[in-house]
Length: 344
Image 1 (cartoon, rainbow, N blue to C red):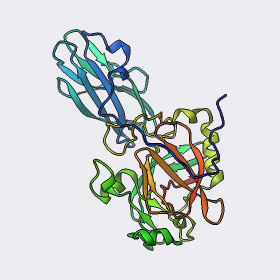
Image 2: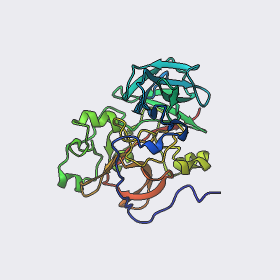
Image 3: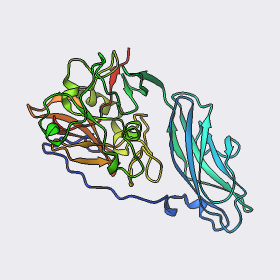
Image 4: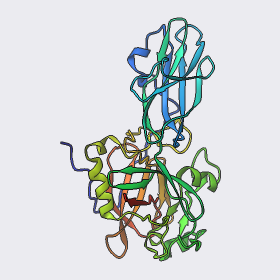
């Protein structure tokens, strides 16, 4: 048996940065595709997951000595899909390409591979596993979130991005540094786009990673989740971890999207399988001193449970590890929120 699911840390979490990558490494490609007469192909993590579609990304790194006359994607409900399964052709030659996989079934595990054909034969990239979305829920502003059932709980599979309480009252934002440090009321913020390479506006950040909220938003009696949903407490998180149990150390909560995939994405290395469909995204956080940290490498998620007058319990995932940590953070720190509810 592995070690305990999470570690209780009675200190502020300090997580180091993660290295980045400019593209898939040749060593990531299965040995069987390294024959010098075959093309060398990589399959990037599948993204843009919806109820009935997903976006595949591939990379032909080497043509093997003869022109690549066809490249594309294959996928199936069974492992190791081939050209005899679902297939879409996307041109020829080397380089990166994307493929929309449509007509998928909701809440199903699929297997997908990029491929490339030259005069010698067909080369496949490493297999990527992904799970289509199960359902949706909308917040008070009409933002729609995909959902996933895990055991006896239903969770949002995206970070919250609402700017109003459930009764439509606006949540304060735009606080300057001194106001942020002294706030004892609910407030939200988007991670500063000037600190994120590839995202230029607050709207871009909201769409990719959601918003960050201090703990006073979580504690406000007006609520922030859709009707019938709630911000999880310590016991809700514990139930989620126990349901997933032995899968936790393999990154079953985390999105597989990794650099060089487009935002939202984790930095490399990213220990992730996303077997649960929870699809954790690394939205980073704004600290109690108004500084920023962790975009791309850390996901911090609120609970309603307090540790003491100044601190609350937070669940943390980072790019280099699969397991989740339970730590405490200042109530003035802004973290991501995932709403949930019990199965009826």
